[in-house]
Structure formats: structure tokens, C-alpha cells
Amino acid sequence: GAGVSQSPSNKVTEKGKDVELRCDPISGHTALYWYRQSLGQGLEFLIYFQGNSAPDKSGLPSDRFSAERTGGSVSTLTIQRTQQEDSAVYLCASSLDFSGNTEAFFGQGTRLTVV
Amino acid sequence: DAKTTQPNSMESNEEEPVHLPCNHSTISGTDYIHWYRQLPSQGPEYVIHGLTSNVNNRMASLAIAEDRKSSTLILHRATLRDAAVYYCILRPRFSGNTPLVFGKGTRLSVIA
Image (cartoon, rainbow over all chains, first blue to last red; front, top):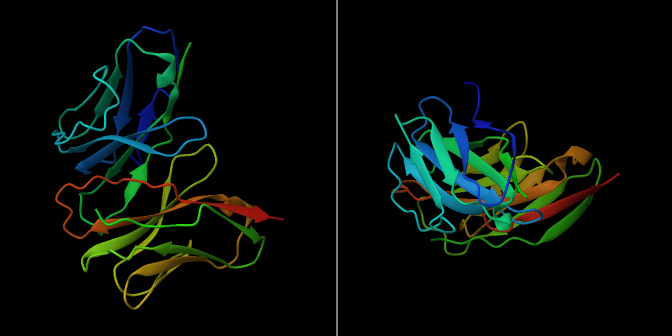
């Protein structure tokens, strides 16, 4: 596709429900990143993928959060048993690789509201 | 990881040049200097990056100090649309899977 695509753009869910957020990176990009941004706050790094592998999951806020990437392309971020503090914009980015000479492209994000 | 230091906020008048500073005194010889910005209610967008030489593109210019311990993002003529948070980030040339991590950035306000 032309850019990084995230879906849904908005999601309202009830506390305790599970949600899945999807990221379609730019074709051919091996690096993929997930971030969270709470209202008025900075970008909180969550997890990154090289291909289908996530070498470091320590940025995930709790064990209710998980992420996977299949076929070196689409990634899903899953939040189980959502809590109100999970309400935020979840952003995905991709880059050609991890070289310092490449830029990252961001999606428009998924705004998650837990009620 | 090499760190960057930026002012929390800056203000500029519309149609005037803006110089956004970034200090990175622990930069290594193979770190690229990247700038991103985040407009209100949008995801971040890439602005520019460089290694040693000054760089120009349609959005901005990047001036890198000779010792590479600091750099300046230059917006030649600020518009209201340039009001955003600007992030200065170091990226290793051979990153070894280093994630892209954002600091607090500089919030630029543009006054009409």
C-alpha cells in the first residue's frame, strides 16, 4: 500500500473485553514498531518486530498485552481484559530495516476508548 | 543508548525562520541524527536526517555541528501548520535491531 495502515481507526470497548488492533506496514518493510500515546502524553514505545520476530517484549505494559506479526507483514496488537487505563492512541510504524539511514513511516493510529 | 536534549518548548512568529536545537554530546561516529514531528491529533512524521554534512529537503534543513555534538533543525519560514512537537533522535548506522524511541521533544508554537 501507499503508507502504513491501521485499523480500526476508532474502537470503543467495554472494560474487561479483549481487543485486537491491526497494522499493515509498507510492503517490504522488515522493521515494525508499536507505540502508545495517552491523552496529552508522549510516545510510549511498546514493542518492535524484525520480520516476524520480536526480540524484546519488555516494553509491553502488562501481560495482558501481546503482539504478533505474520508473514513479515501484518501485525496485530492484542489487549486482553481491557482496563480504562488502556485508553490511548495506539500507533504503528514501519521502516525498510533498522539501518540508521532509513526513516520510519507512521500510521494514523487507533484510538482506543475503554468504557 | 546515546541521548538527546531538547528544550521543552519554543515559540515563533509566523513567516519567520525557526531554529530548533538538539544536543547529543555522547553521539558516536556512526549515529545518524533524525528529526520527526507530530502535528496535533496525528501520528509522527519524518522530517529529515543526516550523518555529518548539512542536509536540505522540501520540509527543512538540518545543520550539524562540526564536532557532531549538537544539531539544529531549521524551518525557513514557519507557518501555523508547523506547530507541532519536534523530536530529535539518534539512530545507529548499524543498529542491531535498536528500536526507534522518542523522547519528550520540543513543542513549537507558531504565532500568527
